[in-house]
Image (cartoon, rainbow, N blue to C red; front, side, top):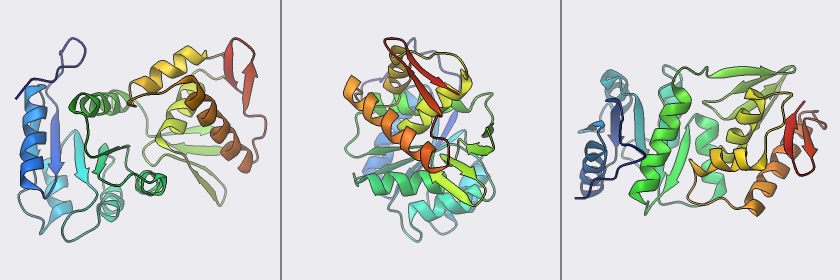
Length: 232
């Protein structure tokens, strides 16, 4: 089994908890994670899934969406009542609705099978990096942003963002009133996706603008020609 190394390979020992009922896939995931320098542990029984995950106290959970006893999305929802542990959903499904539902229930990222091990490790490293020293919530004008759930809430309204939309919004929010170049945004997105081109960035910005407009923030993202974007 090759060792899938990311960057300089210097990773602090983090515990990743694998929730996968296919034994061969589970063993492969554990091997990949251990080769990368993580401490990997897998669920042995699905009788008390939520309690076993919380008891393990992992730094991140890698969870199949289709598991015995309880749907993965519902399990995320139950975990979120007690813990903000980062969760990445792994599934063979590819529809945007599955992604939106998973993120709305509190998953931090989403990757489909068959996955590229290098991409999977990039996703894990990116989620852990985002969680280190960061708050789960922030404010934007009179709205609350929940990074774990991937939502922006204003009064009774709650807008669910896709993973890429939230990454863009989080970057703009962290640099509010400053111009963020397209290259900077593309770099952030590259760490989390297999491939992001200029067209895809424009589409994501447009969708994010539309969702912010639905909350009453029509002027939220300002475009600076040949410079980038600014959150106002």
